[in-house]
Length: 196
Image (cartoon, rainbow, N blue to C red; front, side):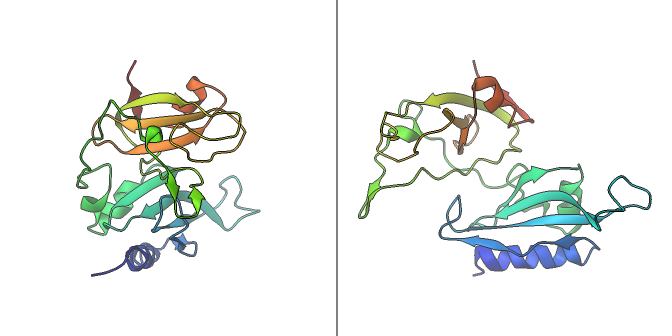
């Protein structure tokens, strides 16, 4: 059985074989989500294209691979990443296109209300597994943080902008994110619709 790192390195190598360039694969136990690996994909500038005199490559997307072999398009600066993955015969592993879905979480108990302490005390934040490129319907709620920087379940977030939780109505995946307000948080999910 291959590891998430091996899957990520194999995908990066296959993409380079198509004439693109990639960054080094990074990630591991301390990544968010844990035990996932990610890398950037670049393409060469076209002659005369803006920026071609300064840079040699243009950023296309950031890909993340999880332990189950799922491929997340975390960020995309130009359309076409899905076509690249499809051309390698790996489209079935895209999380937004046919990846095996996780069972829905109980709606009555938001993720942040679950206990978050471990053997070394409170956890630092919580794991996110929802891609910013997720399509479909999402629920968005503000996570209450007390004066000490903790959510109701005891995870530590510190201070800063308001914390929001986006949850997929389709498969229960979640994403914690900081934003100045609800509208700004919604804009981080350009392909999603939001429940009222």
